[in-house]
Length: 82
Image (cartoon, rainbow, N blue to C red; front, side, top):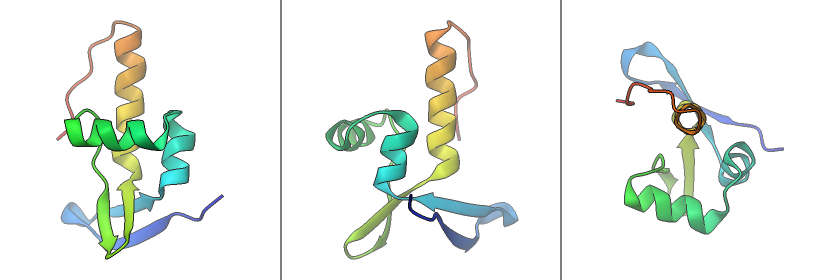
């Protein structure tokens, strides 16, 4: 399991935890191609470019997406993310 990376303080003073693709796949149960396709369509959180050949996702955004999917599957209404 990869160790998540932390960025310095983000807006509002909160720490942002970045996760790499293998952890995203593990959390959501989707494959790489589907994750990138959905991110491009705006139906999944977009990756953050960390370097010239490195990307990660914000863990809180991925977890919120998971919660929204679970709520939608149960017919519950959730508030949209920012």
